[in-house]
Image (cartoon, rainbow over all chains, first blue to last red; front, side, top):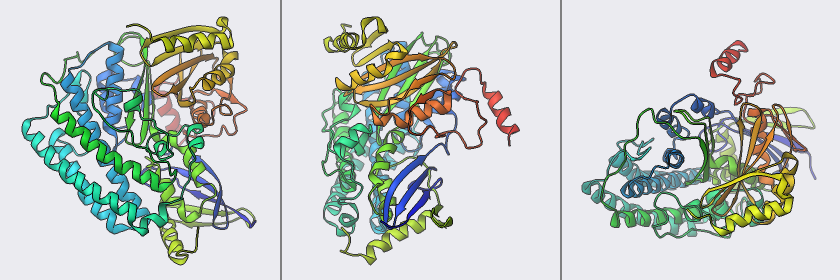
Length: 398
Length: 159
C-alpha cells in the first residue's frame, strides 16, 4: 500500500462538454475513492418554469439539453397533454417516434466518436462523425434544425413528413445501417478498442440496480430495462423492437449496447415509415391554455436512459412545480463505483462510457495529501497519459 | 378506466405492512401510475416494504413547496410502474435518509437538501451538490418565498 493522493477532475471537461468535478483518491496508478460535485451548469430551469406559461416553457424545456432536446420536449408535452387529458393524432405519435429515434442515432454516434477519441483512436472518431452528418442532415430536412428540432408541441407535432422527405429518410437510413454494421465489426475485432474497453469500468448487475443506473449503462450490465418497452409512451406500444442488453458489465458492453441500439432505431424508423397513419398532425390548443389541478409523472427513454418529469398543477396557465431529472444524474453513483479499483489511465474512457452530459474540465488538479503538494493537469494531458500508459505497458497490464 | 389489480394490491400490501391508518391518501390515475401519501414517521418502513416488493429503483426525489410545508416525493419504479411516495415535512424540517435502503437515492437527497433545505438524517454526505460554494446560507431557491428577482438581487449583491 503506497501513499494516497487526492485527484480532483473537473469542474471543466471531465469527459464531454459541460462541467463537473470528480475528486479522486488514488494510490499509485489505482483509483481508491471517488466523490462527485455537480451544479456548475445549473441554470435554475425548474424555478424559471414556475414563472412562465405552458407554451413559453416549451422553449425552455427544449434547452435543458443540446443533444437530447427532443427527449425533454417529448417528456414535457406528453406530461402536459396527460394533465389536460388531451389526445393527439396518431400520425403525430409516429412522427414523434421517428424524431426521437433519429435523435438516439445521432446521440449514440456522437458518443461512439468521442469514445474513440478518448482512447486515442482518432481515425475512427473522424469516420464516425463524418457518417453522423447523414443523420444530422435528415433531422435538418425534417425539422429545419440540426439542434433543437422543435418538433413536438402540445397537441401534436409542428411539421409533417412529406413523401419527398420519406424518400430521403430511407436513403439516409440505408447508409447509416451499413456504416453502423461496419463499426460494429471494428469494435468487436479491433485490438486498439478491445484493449481499452474489455474488462474496464466494471459495474455488476447488482451494483447497477442498487445504484439505480439508467439507460445503456444499466443494459450493459445485463439488466433488461427500457422505458420504451416497460412504460410505453407515444407509439412505442405499436412498434416492434428489441431491448438490447449485454452482460459483460464493462466499457465494451456499453459500446455494443449503443451500436445495437442504433441498428434497432433504424429498423424502428423504417417500420414507422411503412405503417404511418394518415391524418392531421396536431390538435390546436389555446396560447393561454390552462391546465387543471393535478399531478403527472412522465417518463421517456432518452439516449442516455430514463428521463423523468414531474408536474404539479394548481390550475392556471403556469405550472406550480415542474421537476426534471435527466439520465446523467442517475448514472453518477454508478460511474463513481466503476472508477474505483481501476487505473487512472482508464478514468477518461470510463467517465465517457456513461455518455455524461456535463461540460469538460480542461483542468485536473492532483493533490498529494501527505506532502500537501498540488499539481495541475489538463483533461488533454490526462487523456494522453492514459494513451501513453497503455503504449508503455502494452500487453503488460491486466 | 379500470384500475389494474396488481396496482391495487401494491396499495393494499403497503397498508398491511405499515398500518392502514398510516396511509393517508392514494390514487391510481392510470395504468402504471400510483400516488401514495404516508405518515412521515412511516417513510423508512414504507420504502423498505416497497423495495422488497420490487420497487428497487429510485427515479428521483422531488420537493414541492405546498405553501404550508414541503412535500417530499420519492419516485420509485418497478419496471414500468412508477409510484410516487409522498411525505410531508416542515420548512427546514428533517427526514430520515433512505440512502441505506436504496443506495441510488444518495444524490437525489442531496439535491432536495440544496434546493429546499430539508435535512436528511444519517445521510453520508449532505454537502453542496448543485448550488455554488459561495451561495448564501439559508437561501433555498425552490421555496416559493424566494422570488426570482430576490434571488437575482441577492446574488448580485454578494458578488
